[in-house]
Image 1 (cartoon, rainbow, N blue to C red):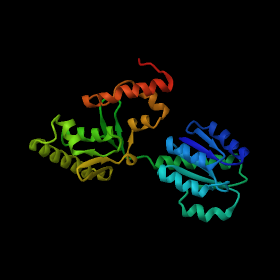
Image 2: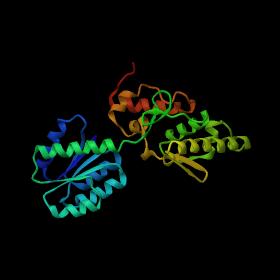
Image 3: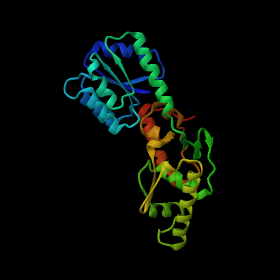
Image 4: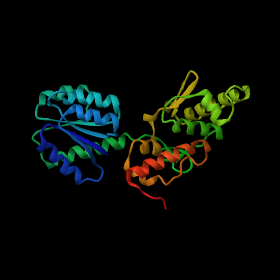
Length: 271
């Protein structure tokens, strides 16, 4: 879990840092004595777990937590404070847990174990594998699509990372047409229905959004190796071996950018 520590008391932050180093599940990616710096980091980097002191100069921990949730809805937030009076405020903003100062190593261990439990509960039921052939899984099992075009449409939405994909882009990509032919528009409508009906059958219709003239995947509702790679998760740099959505020629353009990103990260070579 990518973890940030925010506390203006260096010693308290050091104690948590030492305990995190004993647990392989936690990677401290940032330590901050100012809330504003922590927020700026979270806007540009993945943060899974935030340990926040409440009584901070400038922006306090409660306000920081609210803004972190705005940019990272799934972030696990644990407050650290010496003042029980803040408990109500923490409860109101739906913090995941709170620990009071002074604390000892057992208290820290308890906080980290609770964070892991929360992370496990947050795991999404739907995941996408893009390194190699494209696959959608529900609870770890491959999902069968009603047609090859419906699967390709889902792949295109994943490729676009949750951004809207217009009907013209879908038709031009999946049918290699000009987006005007009536037969292609008919194919688009049929494919959209096949995809939405399949998602409804498995109870996952909430991950796919249809809007006027476009569609998209809800990025925050699914797990995906490609999304993790784009977000800079280190283990994905190792897992990516130069193959991406090999079923679809239109996805090849992303491979070169991914290779550059991987090489820039550590210069790893392919076997």
